[in-house]
Image 1 (tube, rainbow, N blue to C red):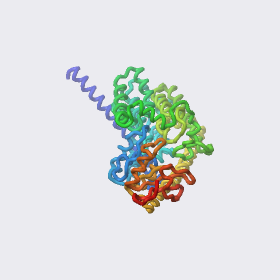
Image 2: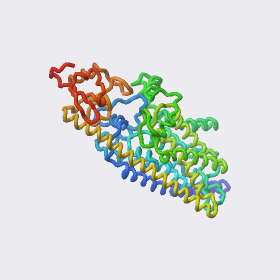
Image 3: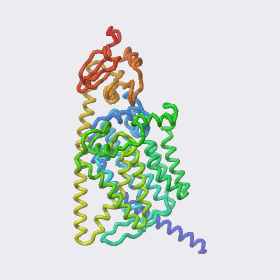
Image 4: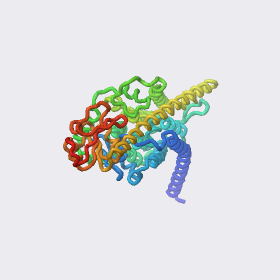
Length: 518
């Protein structure tokens, strides 16, 4: 055998051995992550309950693809990603239960893929713990089976950052959790340079498809690292993903909003004017189970409910310190940086809060947090290790108890509010407001959807019609206007007969030809 042939054969054997080790490592990482994803899915179905009716934002997204209801007004900040996500079910079925089951299953698959993208960067136990930390948050469980974009931005962020790090050539040794107080050392399964860039492009595209502006904020540290290191392929993957996912939003900006600048300006107006605003306290208030805190008033939740919010970044910083000491800084620093940029606009640039806004940041923080937790339970020696493990176990048990308590409270409250919309719709049907019809005024979008009507507004963030157009519509189909009890109805509806339905004062336009003045 010639020397050249021998070298080729040896190289082939090394590739085969390396491939075998990678497959073995992927299998070891995949099985526990698959179990975690299954538990996550089942927990959603058990606690969030498929009977939970559709919320306001869900209605906007779902109504774009269903043939059973008129499409609600689609405002400038929204993107079509969620509508595409639910289309396989919502386009042909009105069943909310079926939609919830579909989204719960899909979110479980997303959780598995998101943390599996980090295989080889951290030990399997760290990845599984990170997935459990993120999946156990009430906001993750609550929004997993809902037609909302933020969870999917979080999934895309994890896939993109993990894929980016696996492609880097200068990763250094993989963290290895010591089992008996020994120092850390390199792992034999460190990811090779030149890994597939499809994960970077796919994760970035998923983020941009769901929320283009969020994708840009998450991608900033990745772009900086790629530019600094002159990694052209990484830059192309990031740019290609952003372009592919954001293209529908940009095209719609020109077809429906007059241009990209106009859409961005309108989106800023709807969000209260992006600028220097401190929303940290608003986010804290929302942690008690408020889906949207706008305006965000009232007392802070009990400190037990908000404690985890302060502990999370502290553990992440500890994870960074450990990474620096082990000379594997980048793989911990980069998700921390992306989490920071993802959270920044929602903490310091808007005047309101929703807990789901920070889901991408929570997902990215979960990995250094899990790394720190394993250090806390393995680094101490002797009886201190038992003490540390007991304290961490108690803290995690208390944290899980708080999260599940808030989740159950939030689900119950939302079930009640969405049933109120359904009851209002039934009452409107009894009063003759049936499809085709139009609902205007307070909470017109959700009540309109539950009634099977179109919705309209003459002012505010969902303005899409005029008083004259509403009156012309009333000559053809039933029209109802909703106001708060004791509120003043709009001028065009004041002559209409008044009714009281639950928490609404309702004015219903008389049937054409009835002779009632307007």
